[in-house]
Length: 159
Image (cartoon, rainbow, N blue to C red; front, side, top):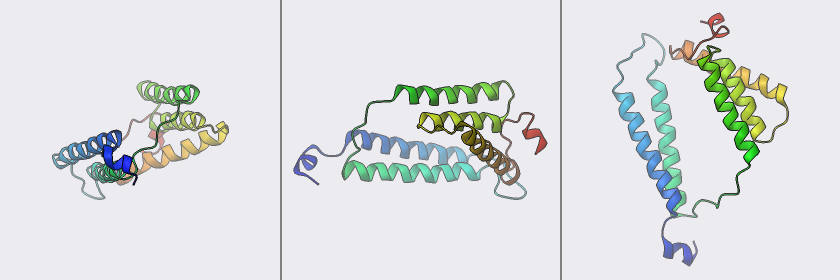
């Protein structure tokens, strides 16, 4: 640690993000503890909020560690094209679910657009990967957690 770092204290953005992530983990934990939904078999729908809570706690603690150690790296300029692809994917996801297209198709759109936003140019491969990931996620939620995600015509073949 440099003397300059010691003089100015913790990296403020990393500290703020770390505290906010821990607060969000507390909210998720509280909300999950108040759920009364039970499952006769399997993990049930209350398992995922606890998994998310653990992830938020780990991310929050990592941010706090970085805040007092090295600080966050300075951000680069945003790539507007990449942001537009990712925002377009989110809009596509929302529109697909709102139109009744279902979770798997919506996630396929989101994955392909996000991959393109990150610079990948293999659209057909990304559509295939997004489709498989969406289908696996849908089946895990539907069969293991007994929690249905937005279903369209494709998902009705599996439930």
